[in-house]
Length: 342
Image: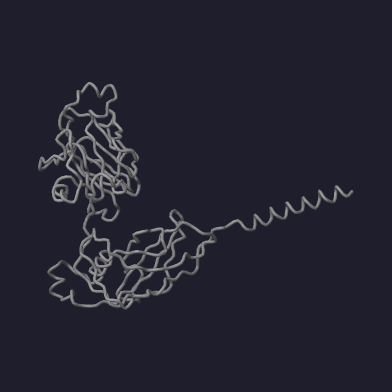
């Protein structure tokens, strides 16, 4: 009898633990409240930048709204010069670290937004209105959402300010990345490679790279970090062509992509086929019908065997970590983030 009592007691404990566990499981719900914190330096004067590559930022802080559990969220901000403006008239500001509730927002992005809010037409209009010498009180809201959950987006109920913002003229221009490898510019004929050695991706060679070996965001996709460019592949020299048939990647025209020209050591600014240096992923003869593949932060290259200069159109999706290569020069349009080669 005593044994039966012990067994029943243990069963009750197990059921109790199971019940507690079920009760403690997090359950998603849409948040109802969300606020952004008043900036400590809201009365400090600062001026926005004109160069989209400038990394200067200002901060906004918030806490994760109550989703029922600690979620991986994306944070961003909205700005207006009128706190009572309809929310659709506020301008979106990207967070440099989108998963952080401590938002770092580039002053360049703020400058672009204020110019848009002021309906500045161009640099001459900016100068004629003497906007350079004015201080602006800017109103901010925070935005939080869980990627992929539609009703998770919430905008802060309050606004905060930076009270003394001075601006330069700034407009949103397409972003770009660099291609480094056995390629040449179709229009100028300038080659990044002599079929063997590549032009060093350094600050000293910035002008040459910017003029010749760049992929740009399309004008209707600015800010999406989707980059498009057409180049000639440069045949390798000093390597017997038939060695390619033995799987020798050194016979391929190779390339990878750089977001900054920092030389050969910093893999964080490189996007390639593999993390390893001197690695090459040969794209087979099927590439002529269009190749798509994954990419990583790393020093690995893609390689395509060509016996004469051959034009290709390349699309790179940095957030999606994807690259497309298609033979020929093509106009590119997008369905979502997927390219169509026209």
